[in-house]
Image 1: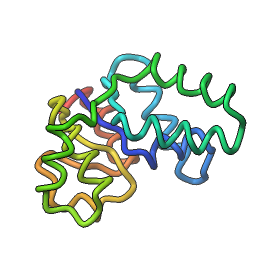
Image 2: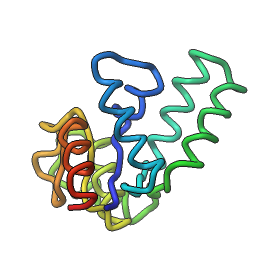
Image 3: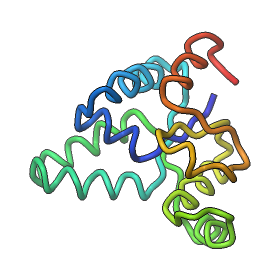
Image 4: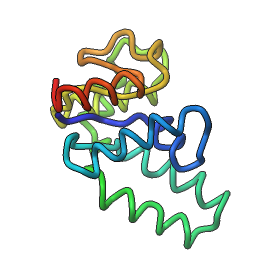
Length: 141
């Protein structure tokens, strides 16, 4: 199962945002053990680096991005993705880019805490707890 992780789920884990971090930890574990093929949008990587560098410094932010790159594939935010996002019926452009990047790489689902922002999604969108439960029970959609 290929799942694109929204930025908020990654930040939940990295910033230990409770109570959300627990579900993020379970999801990251599923990526680590190969039950889920995890994807991050290229924009997520830049956002995480920016926020991490402000909080923990550039050197440690680079190390954290390196860990993410060892775990996740990257869904590009290239011209076709951006053009599709501009035409998509999403209220938030960043969410549209994440959605279109997921579609571009053939993701089976998106995992996010902002379900309401993805009501027009063309692929299934799950809350972290639901995705963890689904992936654990079926090892696929």
